[in-house]
Amino acid sequence: MNEILSNGAMALPNIKSFIDKEISFIVPSYQRGYRWTKEQVNRLIQDLCEFQKEEDEKEKSKQCPFYSLQVLVVEQKDEKLYEVIDGQQRLTTMLLMNQAFHIVKNIEKSGFRDLIIKTEKGLIPSGYDIKYSTRKNSYTWLKELTLAYLHDQKEGTTTHINKFKSKCRDYYHFEEVLSVCITALKDEKVICKLNDWETLFKERAKFIWYDKSKVPFEDSNEMIFNRLNATKIKLNNAELIKALFLQKGVYSNDRIVNRDQLAIDWDLLEKRLQDPEFWMFICRSEKVTAYDTHIEYLFDILSGKSSNDKDRENFTFDYYYDMYLVAHDKFEFVKEQWKIINELFQILEEWYNNRHFYHLTGYLLEYGMKDNKPMTIPDLVSLLYEDLEKKRMMPKSKWLYKLTELVKDSLSTLSSTQLVFANKDIMIKVLMLFNVIQEDNRSNPNARFSFNEFKRIKLGLHEGMVWHLEHIASNT
Image (cartoon, rainbow, N blue to C red):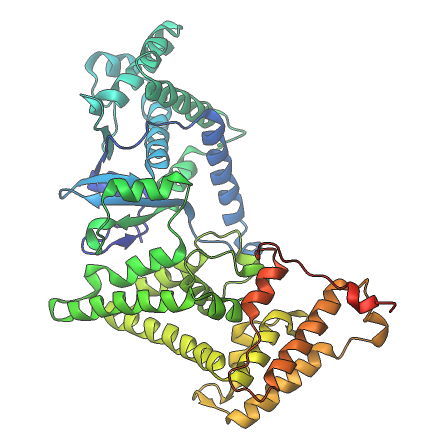
């Protein structure tokens, strides 16, 4: 979607939408200045070119239908004015890229350079602009840069550019990035068709738009900026989906209470998933430290995200956003998706609370295999139903029998000759199952094997404790 949603927090705007709507951005004083280097902009240009090549071979490539410029966090201040909370660097780079394209195609190739220098008409293309709170008259910086470049081109010197660059550190980086973009646009080995390039960077490259003014958010803009940038933390898929689900445009005035309740329920669900005993039960060892927000794991499961999608940073958000765009009734869409999340959670909660289910599913989620791949929660859920379409679950006795058979299958390929000290991973698996079964068979109904303790030691997260298997090969 190219438009900025007038009543929503989330969108996928491109540069063309900023130009068409003549959006103005202001960079507040709490942010650092522009710091992109020629290496960074070269990488961006190469990435865009690679994206275009893959797009030209759609039959061979199942890629995202747009190039993601990452998250742009803003707060609307006026009809066409937005404060940039995060994403300033790429936003400014795209403005410089747009100006470089204008210089090459509309000024130099037109033959009107001298006239434009004299009159300053057509110096800057219509579109969006960026201002800086820390500098007076900051709206003129792009005009000054372009004039300096054109004067030097006309005179065959670098005098004007050097004067511009010496004003401040931001100006140095502005000029460096503009020059790289102009050089690339003039190199047919890099960019062979200007019209194709224009479509690519203006329309196919999109930001993930997050408008703070459209969602309940108590933190100040500066606090949000510091959180996102102190350790280069990015908004994760769960936070983006939460903004999508809670934005004002989804709820009419008589449904605001539904939005507030969803926000409360979301936090309660996340709190439950943060419980170490519960989290380590449902999550395989290699993934337990991969999530700061644990509800994202459930969204990943329902979106069908696999190891093949690991390089698509916003795969899960894209999955829900694509469905959101085509949903006729946004409120019903959010209501249904939240219901699906809760149904999945309730199944996991039932497994956790039933001691026999807990032990067998906990083992299978760590060591179970299906089609030579690690067994997943969806694999187990699909086996839980006698009729998946009608969501009719099998009786608990049958389900327990099914789980027992799956556990047996996980050991079916093992031979006694493999049960030796040298095969540490196999021995840990077998001994873990031995302990799981032992706990499950205890007469004490509260006896439970701790998957939390097991995985923490396995991953080296339990201070001062490591696995020792020496007793297995004891000679005494």
